Length: 132
Image 1 (cartoon, rainbow, N blue to C red):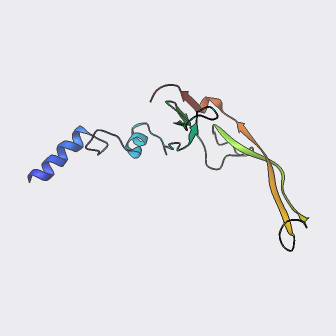
Image 2: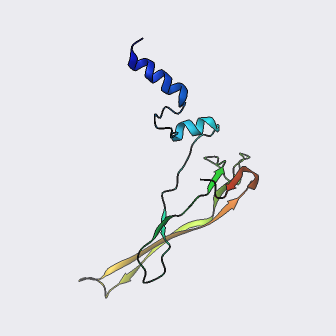
Image 3: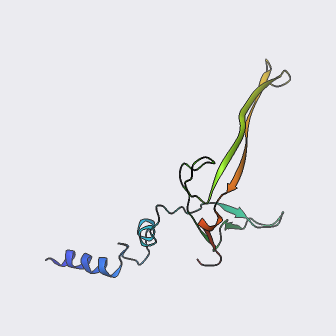
C-alpha cells in the first residue's frame, strides 16, 4: 500500500463524511439521520430599518426543521405526510384590453388558482430552535 492510499484510508476512518476538513456533506448527514433528502434554504432578508444601510441575514437563522413529506400527497391517498397544498376550484385566467398602454394598445392577462396549505400530520414535523 502506498502512502497516498494509506492517508486516504485514515481520512475516511476519521471523517466518515469523506471531507478532510471535518465538515460533513449533505448526503452523509442524510444517510446518518436516515433521511431521503436535505434541503438548505437559500433565502436572505434585509433586517435594517428603512433608511439604514442594508443588513442581510439568513431567513432561517440558527433554526432547523425536519419534515416528512410524501411527493404525491393529496386528500384522497392515505400516504402520511406533514403537509400538502390543496387546490379548490379550477385555475382561472382571462384577458382585458388595455387601449391606453402601448402604441397600438395591449391586453392585460391575469391567471391564478385558489390553494390552501394543509398540515395533515403535525407529528411528522419537528422545529429545532437555535441549534446551528
